[in-house]
Image (cartoon, rainbow, N blue to C red; front, side, top):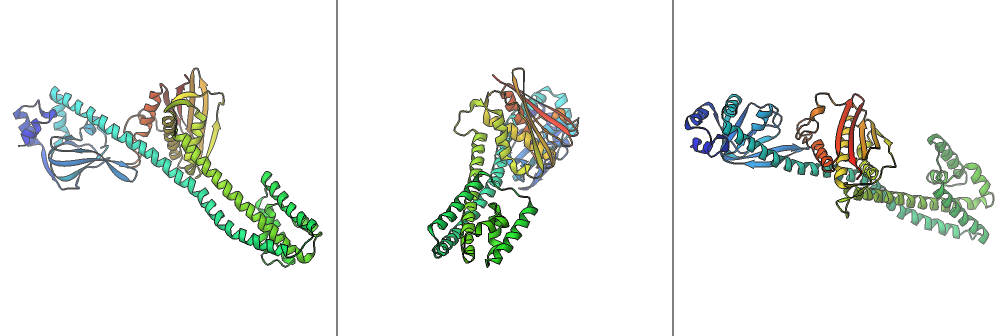
Length: 460
């Protein structure tokens, strides 16, 4: 029975009955329960396997979850790629249902490949087909991972201004009610028309001045001014002095200025007038906060649209600097940890014809890798310049650098220096293919404190 299954497998089809019987005698039969792991990602290669009966899943760790990238049934061979490369397993194999598997040792595998040309060619075909299938699946996973990075950045960046706008709008409702009440108190004073106009003009002028030139005070000076004004207001009987003092300071008021201005009014009227003025200032401040928050949201949405090239042709004249900047907006939440950005842009670089969205995926991979290499603290360096008929983008960091033995393998598919589950090993490989698609070139140099990825793209 097992001999018949092996004969239906291309890898063993050229073996004689005697060889097959020898193989079966030297192999180990395994019975797997549903859910049982046959090989774990990252484990050493000690054998390869043939599925005699049942069904197994091939899983690849992506982030915090296992992704099924293939399902194999009777006659399938497993684990041959790791034996050929003499490298740790790149995926996990798990029984999807009760299964029977044949385990063939490394020594027996080597004897079959080196002693049987038919088996070697069949193995090569199997490996190539599996590589293409796995690469296509994981490339899609890599794109989804990039989308996840984009979504995480958006959620983080949009949450802050949205929350600020929500808080300000909620407070604005109460403040407008207080302002109307303060206006009623002001009207009850029955001030002369000229004094009413003086107060209204003061509010308009202060708001206009504050809009054009926001007051900037160091924290110590601001605190001193607030305490002084609070004491001054309390002397006039204002119970809410602590609440009004900060907003008066924000609009440039000092105790001498208040004293000079209040000389035009009856002392009993001062608290009522200032309450109306301060509340009006507060309304304006809240409106400013809402406006700033919505502008920030618009900026983020615009950056995402530029990043993804929504509503645009896939190939178009592309601004490299705009792509880098929109990528920085997307990854801003990671930069906040303690990374500064040093820009050295050549503004004379012309627009290039490119797949803008794909180039932004390259920038995301390179910048994200640089951030991880610096462990969230350091300097990200972005430089652009021309070199002959090519536009060049350099993305560098001052992290510990890439080991010399790792550099030659950085762009290999599935190669990663990260722990199992931390990366697919396709980020730089996908980036490499995107640059090749643009007839460009990507290179890397690294030493401690200076790692640079250099991307050269034809201008025409």
